[in-house]
Image (tube, rainbow over all chains, first blue to last red; front, side, top):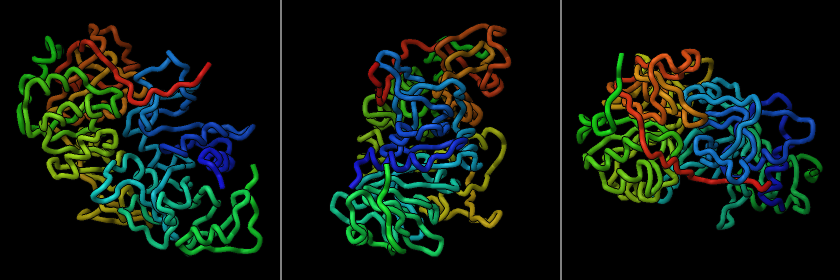
Length: 218
Length: 231
């Protein structure tokens, strides 16, 4: 079973040189720590920066320089700042090649829910709805099951949706899965030491298993 | 054209109960601290506030929320404020949550004379309820309307007496669009200079969008999530 860090590490393998990438809050943020050797990407944060760098050294924090998670960050050489309308022009206009975000639920047709639990938790969608509505390549990073042990990969989402039919790939602590156009989670890779049966048991939505399923490699 | 007012009291003198106010900022970054403090002091109520976030419990718009001065919030993300969540779930506070990109574009549109636009964001979700849906290039989009406000209050790094503004780093965020969308736009700045001192090539918000400008004081610039790495 993968740790949160390993989920991020596995997603980082998907990065391709020349891509502009938007990372959501939580596990997705960690992806920036594992850019493979020789791959050159640039990170966009929707509050208004391209060319986001690592966290600042202590004492060098700048209150005017943060990421979408409100964390203090740094800017790399070549970075640029812009307003929120320009930022979402980049996103809606499909100038960002990859979006990685967390989710509470994903359905077998690629719907995603991650912004609201009616009557309980209302944080708002932030930029998630704009991101998922436009991105051509969306990877969801999440645990396979919730705290109660229930599957988060479902036939239909039960929570209010963030977007419909948009998720292309899901990387969980158990597996890498592709959401196929005809509906269903196609199992691509297993986490080290996790059996197909365990993945099947933790997946409520339709799981498509074709041939031998390889283990993830790090 | 001189837009300078003496201080925050004068800048906010005609803001009364019941008005709609846009406030720039993302989280606590780039918020008009002086003006928010003045609104708290003025004790006005029934405000409709348009702002990406709602501050934290004891800073930013959280200060107005705590005193129940806000009737309605129009925001995209309010996760950092427990009091907000409490008032919203209990029904004391009216809340309109809208996707962040749609919020930015609705303000921009409001300032640019575009009454409405189609966007893919929110299609198939509760955000789309009651909105016109139209297909473009085989993809469904929803109709979103422009936003304007009685007052827009923005915070800039530098400004000149004509109201030309320059923002710093990610403190720019919603400030430029909101400056465009206010019937009266008030700019508070860290450094107020004479006209001619700012390079016209570097100005982000032209002074035409700004009606009042003043030199801000005592900026706290609180950091919400201080994250550092070790040397």
